[in-house]
Amino acid sequence: MARGRGVRPRSRTGEDQRWLDPLVLPSLAVLAIVVGYPIVYTLVLSVQDYNLIGNAAPRFVAAANYQKLVADPIFRQALVNSAMYTFGSVAVSALLGLALALLTEGFMGRHGRVLRALLLTPWAVPFVVVAFLFRYMYLQNGGAINAALLAIGAIDAPISWLNVASIAMPAVMVANIWAMTPFFFLLSSAALAGIPSEVLESARVDRARGLTMIFRIKLPFVRNALIVGSLLMTISNFNDFAKIWAMTQGGPGYSTTTLVVYVYRQAFENFSFGYASAIGVVWLAMLLAFAIVYVRSIRVV
Image (cartoon, rainbow, N blue to C red):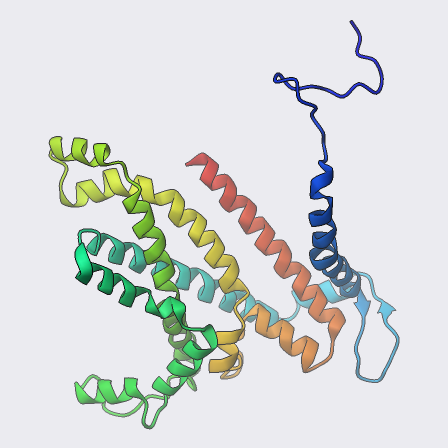
């Protein structure tokens, strides 16, 4: 029998299948205002020559801002710096967090809880505080890092860590890794605690020990948690402004300038909102592409 008009399709349980539930409309409205409007407005600004200096009216320039990006060497350097800062920090933090989780897995009792709490302490420190803490530790005269290295004879003279282009980015990454490792430690510890005891007992019966137990039994259970955590931290680090700005403000030169710092400078120092919006659109497109690839990789594994 042909289905008549106006009859809603029903699922196997007999319930109506609606393509949109009215209960989610308020949430969709909030998302449209908070997320959708800024994105659309940024797209509009990205095809305009809009600069607050001179009080000139916005002028439509089509793809001129995007063409300018292609020829902009600072944009290319900011893109490379963003990739180095983001992927380098996430990779090292994930490995350190996993290693700490494996090392402390057998620590029980009060001392184990105290040790875990101490390892999680950096995650509780605000990012701006972390930035200023390491900034003072990196001081050429009076900094704790130079004092320690001089005391053990590792260096002959104090190093200006944040004022040398070749070492400024690694120095900032160290602060970021210190602040981010507890997140992966907590994530890995929770994943390890969720491994069924039957699986571990069966592996021990089969004489799985040491690296075999880690790589063949434990890592497959931790893998998906690390993948999801890495995705979240990649997006967070790609958007990280506070630590870099508080430590170096993108300098010396442009050695620590990332995309978010470059967008800030274009928008709030040069007042070139059209060009800054074009950078933001490219930035958003790259994050979306990365997220899609990452989520599909989870399905594959």
